[in-house]
Image 1: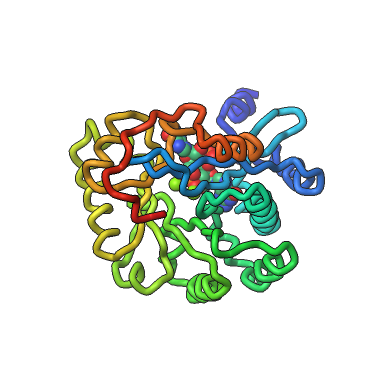
Image 2: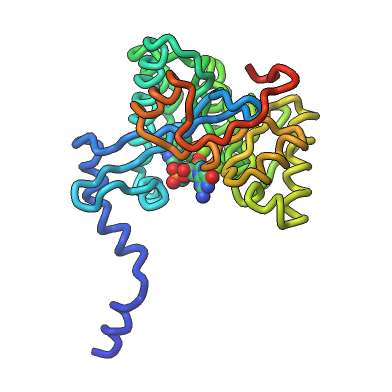
Amino acid sequence: MQLQLFASSLPDTEGEYNDLEPDLILALQKEQFELFYQPRVDIRTGTIIGAEALIRWRHPERGLIAPGEFIELAERTGLIVPIGYWVIYRAGMDMQAIKRAQLDIGRIGVNLSFRQFEDRYLSRTIQRLIEKYRIDTSVLEFELTESALFSNEAHVRQGIEELNQLGITFSLDDFGTGYSSFTLLQKLPINSLKIDRSFTSGVIEQQDDREIVKAIINLSRSLNIEVIAEGVETRLQHDFLIEHGCYQAQGFLYSRPMPFQDFLTCCKTASFPRLTKSRPAANPSPYR
Ligand code: C2E
Ligand code: MG
Ligand code: MG
């Protein structure tokens, strides 16, 4: 009895996950997923120069569930594969709506899980999606984590090359948290590095974080690839980035992720719900 009591008071992560698993299977069929969009901003001018698509699950009983609560389960169960295709399809449809509204807002980042490469039909299926739904690959950017990219698995690299041949570019998400190889960074079709939020949030108070962020900015400069700071929340972080030559960012300071219709309105009116406008740029942005 006592043992049972002990066991039931343990935080049961597996149990929690299993709890959501049957619902997750149905969620796709019942169209319970949504994509929110967080603008990517040229922080010198306050212009939207892209966005990241971030999945949400509108659960009938639990309300809006953040990806942190179900992506890992989706990865473990393999459901990330069909969910990942849905995300690409949905982002493609939204990109068409942006085009129909005659807006040019730059690239849309879509997160791609390392697990999705376990589907050997990945690039073929994505190619079919692109053709069927006329997805504009020139504005599609897949966000991969370093662990995905630098896993020694040849099929991941081959998949990346094949997707790149379809016109899709790549960015390295959560950069600085994994292991990267300088040579591979040069060889692979990487368009940008996204500085992980854990470093951005420390630039004012933590010497280590400050040095890491400066090093990543310098690395991107020598490799001639773009650099984007994730998770900018304060004006001081924003000023630090400008001072050190990182002109693209995402973060709550500019805007939180929002439903697509709100994002579209935001692009049309060129206004952010919470944007702190910076001074106009002295030089035109190299990224536009
Ligand atoms: P990520 O790709 O690194 O996305 C950035 C996360 O940071 C998002 O959380 C975003 O809402 C949050 N964020 C942005 N700015 C700020 C800020 O200023 N402060 C703070 N505290 N947070 C900020 P979200 O939407 O909960 O997504 C978490 C992670 O889930 C993503 O991290 C990504 O790894 C994963 N994810 C999201 N959507 C997808 C998807 O469609 N497919 C896959 N495979 N993974 C996804
Ligand atoms: Mg991302
Ligand atoms: Mg990230």
